[in-house]
Amino acid sequence: MGKKKTNYTTLRGLILAVLVVLSPSVFAADDGGIVKSRTCPDAKLFSNKLITDVCWDCLFPIRVMGAKLGGGSTPTKAANKTMCVCFDNAGVPEPGIGVGYWEPARMIEIVRESGCAPSLGGMSLPGTNRRHQGTTGADDGDSSDAGFYHYHYYAMPLLLMLDMFVSSGCFSDGMMDFDIMYLSELDPTWSNDQLAFFTNPEAALVATLPALAACTIDAATAAVGKVVDDMWWCAGAWGNLYPLSGVTTTSGFANMTSLASAKALGALHRRGLAVRTMGEDAMCQERIIDPMFTRSQYKMSMFYPVAEAESSHVIGETVLNWGWGRMIPAAGEDALYMIWRWNDCCMTY
Image (cartoon, rainbow, N blue to C red; front, top):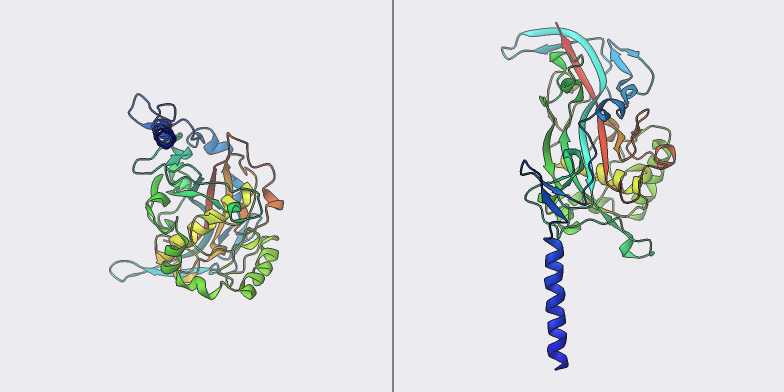
C-alpha cells in the first residue's frame, strides 16, 4: 500500500506542476491575441523613454574629414581619411569626404524567462519553450553559481527611425526599422557548452591559465575606456568570452547581463550575422563579414531597468564605473542594452 501511495503522490505532483505551467496566471492573451507573460516585465521601449533614456551625448565624437567634433574617444582602428572615393555599380568613381560616428544600431535583450520580450511590451514570443529557463545563479561557491540568460537581438537604427540626419551614403547595413534579428531560444549552441565548443573550436586555444591571466591586462585597459582587440578571447572585467554560450560564470547582475551581451555579439560575428562597419575598407561597403569579434567597434549603454542616459561603456569596462544600482529586485532583473557601433563611411557627392 505504501508503494502505491507514493506513486499516487508523485503523479499528483506532476499534474500540479503541469497545471502551474499552463495556468492562465502565467500567460494571458490581450484583446489583439498577443500572448503576454505575467512574469515578463515591460521595458516601455516605444514611449517617451526612447527620448529620455537614450544617451544622446554618446553620438559623439563625430569625425568629419579627419577632424573630431565633440568629446569622447574614437576606436583606434577607425578610418581617419579626409577624402575618399567609392565606385557605383557601373564602376564610375564617386569622390567624397570621410565621416565616422557612433551609431545606435542594435538592441540586445537579456532575459531569464524563455521567450520573454520586455522590449515588445512584455509579450511572450512564439516558438519558445518554458523548460529552457534561465537563472541568475546561486552564491554557494560551487557550480550552481553560474548564471544562464537568453538573448534577443534587434535591429535598432534609431537615427533613421527618428528621421535624424543620416546621409544616404552612410547607411551601414540597410536596416531601416526595429526588427527581430536573432533569438537564442532557437539556437542549440547557446544552451549547450559542448555544442558551442564544436562550432567554435578556437576556444581550446584560450582555455589555459596563461590566456585567462592575460585578460587582466584587457580588464585594466577597459577600465579607462580602451579595448585591446588582439585579446579576442577576453571580455575585460566581465570575464572570459568563451565558450560562446549563455552560461556566465561571473557574479552580479550588471556583470552577468553584460557578459551575456558580449558573448552574443561574439557568436553572431562568428556566424556572419553581425558585420564590421569600421575601418577604411568598410567606408564604401554596407556589409563586411568579419568572423573575429572586433570589440572596439562597439560600446554599450543600459536602457532597462535603470538607464545610462548620460554615459556609455566599452565592452569589458568594470561595473564600478557604470553598474552601481542598475538592478531593481523582482521588477527589473532582466536587461536591455543599446549597442552603439562605430560607422566609417564615405559621404559622396
